Image 1 (tube, rainbow over the protein chains, first blue to last red):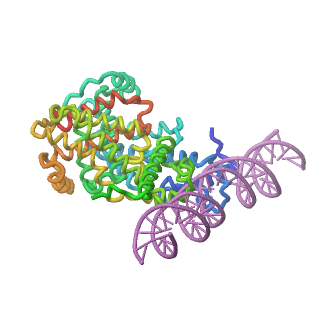
Image 2 (tube, rainbow over the protein chains, first blue to last red):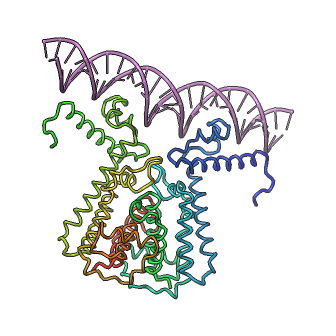
Image 3 (tube, chains in turn blue, purple, yellow, red):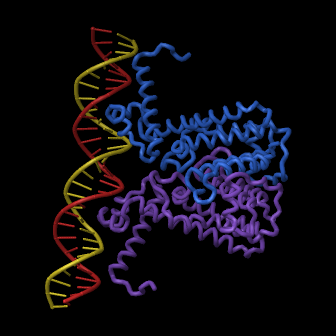
Length: 232
Length: 232
DNA sequence: GCACTGTCAAGAGCACTGCTCTCGTTTCTG
DNA sequence: CAGAAACGAGAGCAGTGCTCTTGACAGTGC
């Protein structure tokens, strides 16, 4: 029921909002989130800095918008990577494609990646609306495992889940992956954190002087983690 | 050959340097690196902001000093954790203690952890002197594996290393862990990145709503990773 | 003992920042 | 068409990192 006819004002507002985000993203890519300045964005757009506040009530709100866009861009890339590779034919190839797509996106947009997975903005807590976009990668990961659920071949038995973990995982399974056991789900989370830990270490310079460039280490680890979660 | 007798000036300088770092660390803990302000530190110390520049030529230099201290504090904790648990008696217990010590330190000093393993300061590249302190955790991790080298029992054979990874790992082995194979070394790096990926995800809020609180997930994963690298 | 030299804290000031408020103007709407 | 709502621009506040100058002090050589 969205009105196709909009007033000139609404269209202008929408366009300007996009343009502000475009310019902000440009500065983000060049200088990093720390140095993203509302005044500089306004200057570049040829408007008064105060006018920006009609579109984004604060700098953090602009950052939140960029975070949302970034989560969605990354999520879309990951989902496409999983879907592209002959759906459900070869789960390991899907897993490979998923991991590569996340790393590629991260290396293409290092500052946006840092915005999502680096130090959180102090005093800033992610609003509820970021939860869904932020979940897209792990959900894509789980979808790969779900499609291959009956063929999973674990190299070593999953240790029994204990305490709160058992409850948390059991509660999660019906919501996100009813085809999987709680044990496999927990291993999925392990490889998920491993994936992002590895990418963060690479991007943030913790592998310099040892395994950098990390292309082959990354590819190798992707296979080891595929084994770990039991992908055929 | 360090002179035991120092001039009053030297002693005053040393003390003030420590005091500045102490106050900066306090503000860091309270507000985060982003909001660490030289002027606020000076204000709290009852001196002019310009005077601070005699001790640290820039804000980034002060941050570098804090980073160095933090790396050393974390490294020391990790090394002590490994040494404390009946040296070489029970490598898995050592591994457990190592992981716990890193996570505990991170939760006790979240902002300092973020300074080390979060988004790097833009335009700032770690000087050479940070390399050694930054390596202490992974070296402690490797020392655990080295002590247990002949008893390692891998649940699934390490995939052959390919391309640059094979060379990088082979070059690293004699330097950091001559008792280990390149394959085990690469797995050590995998669990290393997993450990910090998991801690970062927990601290940065990516587990909220799923596996948070993460104590049991952490403990469980530590065991799974111990299996992964073949600890008895 | 005294003058010299280098070090030091302090203050003013520059160029920024995020953000608020006011003030005309423009645009939409009843 | 008149009133209301939205808008851009400008001034201004409080804060930031950092630089430069100024005057006072401590350490050293004569």
